[in-house]
Structure formats: structure tokens, C-alpha cells
Image 1 (cartoon, rainbow, N blue to C red):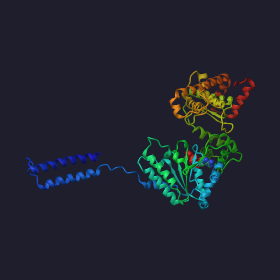
Image 2 (tube, protein in one colour):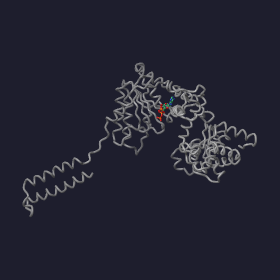
Image 3 (tube, rainbow, N blue to C red):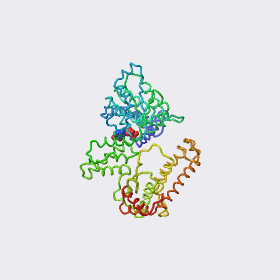
Image 4 (tube, rainbow, N blue to C red):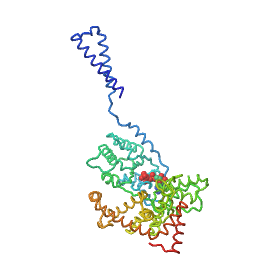
Amino acid sequence: MIKKTIVLFALVFGSITSLVLIAHGLRPINGLGGITSTDKIAVWAVTVVLLIYYLSLEERPQLAPSMLAIEKENNRAQDKPAVTFEDVAGLEEIKEELQETIDFLLNPEKYRRMGAKIPKGILFHGPPGTGKTLLAKAVAGETNAGFLYASGSEFVEKYVGVGAKRVRTLFERAKKEAPCIVFIDEIDAIGTKRNMDSNNEKDQTLNQLLVELDGFNTPDTVIVIGATNRLDLLDEALLRPGRFDRHIYIGNPNLLAREKILTVHTKNKPMDKNTDIKAFARKTTGLSGAQLANIANEAAIIAVRNNKSYISAHELDAAIERVVAGLEMKNPNVLLKEKRTVAFHEAGHALASKLLGTEVVQKISIIPRGQALGYVLKYPEEDRYLMTRKELENRIITLLAGRAAEEVVFNEVTTGAKDDLTKATDIARAMVCNYGMSSLGTLALDEVYIRYNYDTIRLEIKSITDRAYREAIRLIEDNMHILNIIADRLLEKESIDSQELDMIFKEKSKSEDYAI
Ligand code: ATP
């Protein structure tokens, strides 16, 4: 910038001098008599050189990033994955569903002779970490086909046309590598619904993807697998027959699948023979395959740290805590007053959970982990697919029981309930808007209705959470003697496990009754 300003200044000076010299040639100016023709030519030449140099400094239009970069990107994952269906635990029905695709990749002629058009676009959808990428790789591994990986976000560019070009390059490469699987992760990054104020670049990229999917009636054996966590966001055009018309939902694993995933990921690790993997599958309800793989790995790391020669239940428990609750804070500087608040808050959750039977309490702790000063580790007794209104209400009561304990014991509330309030409100909101469980009636409300009628909806949500909070206060007040024991024990030992909690309840049930 400075260089450009100096050159411009010199150019302006040179231009004025040149004009003065031209004027002097037409009508001699006093004081310039000594100027020779050579001087004039020199000034003009310098001015012209300065002009050319200045123009060369003018900002060139920015070019789109090199296409070579993306070609290299695509080279990255073209290798044939060593993963097979054996490495994918659980998901049996999905593997079965994919058998036809595998057969097509292995015996394309069989289908062509029959004039059959095989669905070439498969869409995996579901929560993160459930094995979508792993499964796509396994399809390639089972058929010895190439595997081209691309993430939707790699196609998102501000330069018009770059994303589309990248899509073209990817598919050209796929045709060269056939038979092969093109896997587009996070396809929602380019495939969201188009609307009036759509972004031109994104539309072009999506259009190019549609064109490539349509243009697959070639002899090339290429299967495109897309993956997304948000099927609802995808453009209809992408989902219509002939494109991504096979939708396969991959959810979090059930009990049996969790056991299989934990078995796969502990297979090559030295395990204590007495470790009951099924018990750990039970403790990990709601976790994804990726989290389970992480637990197995964390357990191995903890075993090394503890100088153990094998992984036992103790390491697995510690790994679950690490993955679910976060990293333990070393030497936390928590005031005693705050520790007391946390102890009663967590005791409140555990008490309500136990009394209402919402979930099995595995551990209560006031050792800070992640962003939490304390936590209750709990899991449902069994996998649940349906929840009753009562069960949802009990969950809200359990979530609000931490704050209720603070209010009853200290007559004051703290910021510690932030996360609980968010979760309780989310459940109440779903009860009102999705499950038809409020006085608004048995209907599901769409986003537009919710936006324009939020005041009415908020009152319904508030009525559910207020009722739950009153119930939480009642539970705490009626069972103060147990709450005090749990909180005192926490302040003394920092954590209580399920057996100890059971003992507290058993003793109390012998001496004084506890009230539900
Ligand atoms: P995202 O939606 O975030 O991209 P994803 O569904 O593609 O996630 P993967 O990347 O396939 O998830 O899974 C991550 C890791 O979790 C895998 O590499 C594997 O170690 C483990 N995993 C997930 N599901 C399974 C499973 N069913 N069997 C064995 N391992 C699994």
C-alpha cells in the first residue's frame, strides 16, 4: 500500500512536469530556457515507466483458490479401506439392507442384463458418531472398491463456481476409480433447501451435485453415499427417486449393540477376564458408538497411567466418567461455601432420582469435572423408546431438584442450575410443541406457529416447570433427613457410589420412613 502511494505520488509529479514541458515547447516559459530535448525525453520516459509500473501494481482480481488443491484433497482418501462389516458392531439390519448394494458392486453385469437400475444414492442420517462413515468404508472394504471421502464443507466457498467445480472434479475422479464409493459427509453443508434469498454459490454447487447424480447412467460402478445429522434440512430435489432415494437411519446403539461395540473396541486390549462388558453396556445408555470407542481407548490410557498390565472394571468406570462428565480438575480452588451448595444441589438430584425411580444413580460426586462443580452419574434401567407423560414430568422434577435443594437449605439460589434449567425447559417445550401433552391440546406445533405464538406457548411451558419445581421442593422438604446425610457424606468423601446410596436409603427405611 505504501509502495503504491509513493509510486502514485511520483507519477503525479512526473505527469505535471511532462505537461509543463509540453506547454514550454508551445510557448517558452521563463526560467526553463536551459531544458534540452534529452531532458524532456528523459522526463517523459520516466513518467511512462512510472505509469506502467503503477498499473502493474493495481490489484489484480482475486483468483479462486487453485483447483489443484482440491484435486490433491480428493487424492487423499482414494485408497481402499481395510474396514469390513466385521468391524461394524451391531447395525445388523442395516448391513443386511446394504447387501444388495454390495452385490451390485461385485456383480454389476447381473443387474444390467436385467435392465435394473440400482439405487446409486444412499443417505445415512442420524446423530453424530453412530458409525455412518465407518459403514460407508465397510461397504467399500467388502467389495474391494475405492473410497473417495469428501466433506460437504469442503465445497462451501465464497467464489462462485468453485464449489461446483470441486463437485465435478470429485465425480470425474470417481468415474476413473470405478468401482468406487463416493462418501459425502455433512452433505447438509451443500444440500440444504433452496429458497428465495438463496446463496448463488451454494445453489450452483447443489445443482452440480444433482447433475452428477443424474449423469450416472453410465457403465461406471459408482455408489454415492451421503451422511447427515439433519435430514429435515435437505432439499427435496436431492431426495427424489434416482438421487438419494434410499434413506437409512442410524441411531444410537441399543443395549446389545453397545455390548458388541464395546467388545469390538476391547478385542485387541488386555482385559481382566472377570470384566462384565454387558454391565458396562447397561451403564452407557444413550452414548454413541464413537463415545463407546472413546471409552475403551480412555480405559487403556488410564490402565497405562496406573501401571496396570490389564484393563479392569475400575478403568472402564473411570473412562465412562471421563467421557460423560469431562476431565477431572486437578487442585480446584472451590470455596467451602460453594462446596456446600454443590453438595446439597447434587444430593437433591440424587434424592429425587432415587425416590421417583427416573434413573439408576451410579455415582454422585462434588469433584469438579469439565465445567461442572459436581455431577450425578446415572443411567436408565433399560433402553426406552417411549416415555409416558408422568415419566417426562419426573425427569423435569429430578432436573429441578438440585435448585430446589439450594432454595430449601440456603433460602437462596445460584447459577449452578443453568444446565438443568435448559434441559428441563427443553423437555417441557417438547411436551407442549411436539407431544401434545399440554392444555393447548393433542397437536404438534410447527416452527412458524411457535414463533408467532410464543407467549402462549411459554405460559404452557412455565406451568409444567412450575408444577415440577413445586413437587421438587415438596420432595426435598419431606426427605430433609436423607438429603442431609447424602450432602454430609459428599462433603466428607467427595463422592458416593450406588451401593453406598442404597445403604443410606435402606437404613432410613428401617428407622424413619421416607416420603414420596
Ligand atoms: P458423524 O456424523 O459425526 O460424522 P459418524 O456417524 O460418521 O459421525 P463414524 O465416524 O463412523 O461416525 O464413527 C466414529 C468412530 O466410532 C468409528 O471410527 C468407530 O471407532 C466408532 N464406532 C461408531 N459406531 C460403531 C459401530 N457400530 N461399531 C464399531 N465402532 C463404531
